[in-house]
Image (cartoon, rainbow, N blue to C red; front, top):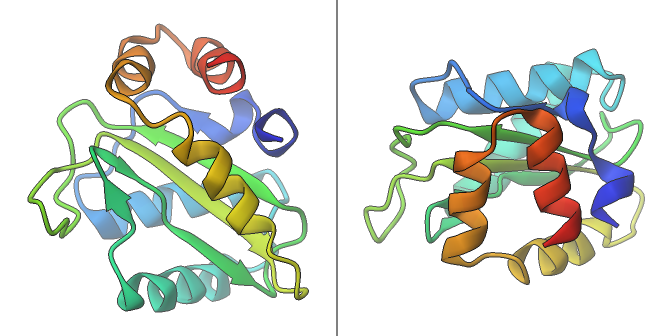
Amino acid sequence: MLDQLTNTQLIKRQLSATSKTEVFEELAQMLFDNQCINNKAAFLDDILTRESLSVTSMDGIAYPHAKSKAVIEPAIAVGVKQEGIDYGDEDGVNPTVFFMIASPDNGADHHIYVLQELFGKFEETFIQNIQNAKDETQILNILINS
């Protein structure tokens, strides 16, 4: 499923963001630029609403997600920040790998299946491999083949 939801245009090996809000902005812009969402502000509102329910991170990975009317096409934007970003994680871990999941608000539970597939990959070597990737193509290969 991941190979249908992301591509090298939706992956950024070195995020410029320095805060959680900036990560959201940067990843949402990638979704907007690739015509996966039609309204960045509305999508970000939906992301922030979902995030207010509970922090979406664990073990150094953040997975902000939302069902949104702004989503044209289901997609995942992926970003890496080697230094990590304060995300408000209850364990105090600053995530270094970010998956922003955009799901259409059409009643389907698409995001749940995506989360299940991603969670199946979350292990220390997965994070290290993504952090050590040389470029976006290598990150995509790790996502699809791990």
